[in-house]
Length: 300
Image (tube, rainbow, N blue to C red; front, top):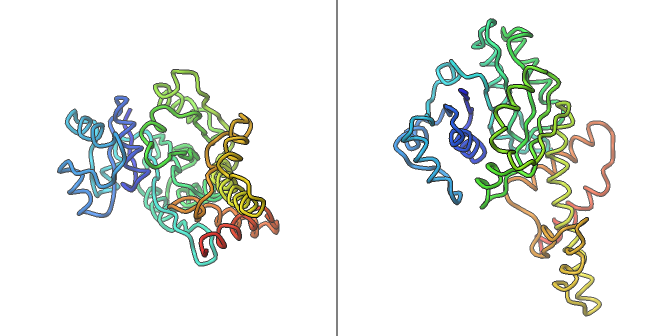
């Protein structure tokens, strides 16, 4: 299968390399010529354990390519992944300018006689698939020439290759039957051990990603609150963590007290979900508390 991945950041590079590893021909597109030159010369521009080995093997076997032209990159692709940044705006909402800019371009490039599956791989707010579809239609694409799908990633830094190659679940947001069949074939090699491919509507898939990250952030903030209580009571937070983490309904991950949650995803995704809640006049009090606890913890 021929795939285009638009964006060569963390998610884009892992996505492109892992799909090439299962025999697909993948072309990654980026406007940053210096980065594309480095990638074409065999230099991996991010560090992730196990990625370089797969990257070099698939490049050598002519399954992984890098290019600056969006027109050339998507020319024969049946599937187009949008793996573009969604930085937080001043109000905490996710900025969709990069995704919508590419969607506008794609509208002019998609042949009406083709059928392309256009996938939001980036973490995007609820309703983004509708906005991408509107951008495509407003710029010349026809209804029958594409389907917009939400397919969020659930990668952990440090084990992203394993997470991609052996996912505990694959979430696909689409109600288009043709797109479902194409994506079932695409993901079949990754779920041979029986882990589920979960189909749902686009909005539910978009919210699933934010809900997952918000819940993990909540666990971290909750454990920091428990750590504060342990200090006051003279209890051992590490023993408490082991005690509740052994409950399979809770699990042991993200129950370590510390300086709070950070990184590239949790802060912006929690803020974006809170911002989306405000847009529909819902006060997400638990999430507000999570952010407040994390803010206090980071300032100590």
